[in-house]
Image 1 (cartoon, rainbow, N blue to C red):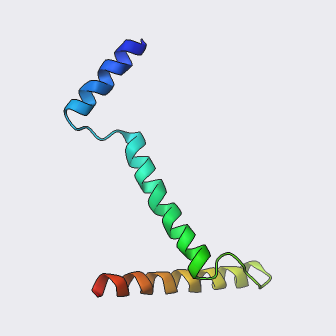
Image 2: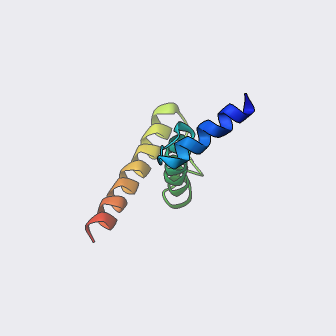
Length: 76
């Protein structure tokens, strides 16, 4: 069984087939990069308000600022 999986992996590499694990890893790293920027640069690490609505508003302003920053980077 292990040799069958190994042979299948070799054939997938031969035809440059993108495995689902590789795609999930790439998407996961993109999400983690955005979350890290939100926490480090846009106030997502230390939220100093109480209540679900206020926390949500605080984080959404961070997301808005992050989006504006990314658009600005894209244009220039």
